[in-house]
Image: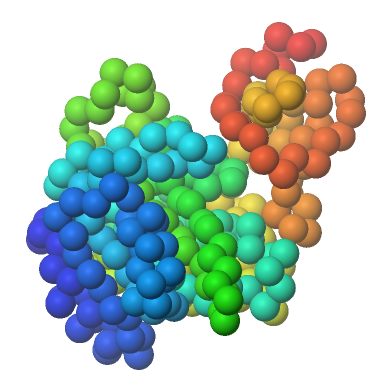
Length: 265
């Protein structure tokens, strides 16, 4: 299986599918999202622009967390897409991208979504997703950032028990074919936000790792334990706390706590 990223091969595949993306590969950058954002601000990039890096010195996850980004070990990619018609729908981009990742990976492995933006394999984190809305004077667009663990067999101690890669899971894949599929699926699913978000949310729920599962949600001002009951029409998490109260969660760190239910009985 091919394990060398080749942007020309990716572009040829996308061209055959009717997609015209400008893909730039960088040996190193601070963050592909930051790099793409700078290019957009300089009017050097827009919807249809993609940056892939071999490594990141300041890879970022949600809520300011660092994303482990060693050279040649993972996919670090940011894609500029058109923003939803309603800017208030921008948070739905993560849901669209998560469903796209499920579809792109499906031919080689079965994975699940941990709300709102993580892809899990065997209860371990395989991929993280970020989205940012970019507003300029004359236009608005969005960036979707993907960090997908490909070849790591060893992780730093702090994440060694919570992370996994495709290689560590024994999954064989052609990296250029996989990247082409991810781009194609993201392009397709982002376009569904405006008119068919119900369908996206249905697919998101069907692939959820946490529905009907005990979790702990850590927020800036509180910690809530309970059972995830599903997602509302905007993709926000519906949690039934162990005290019986229903919460609609728009953000927070979610961790599986399969033994919590027993502890609260």
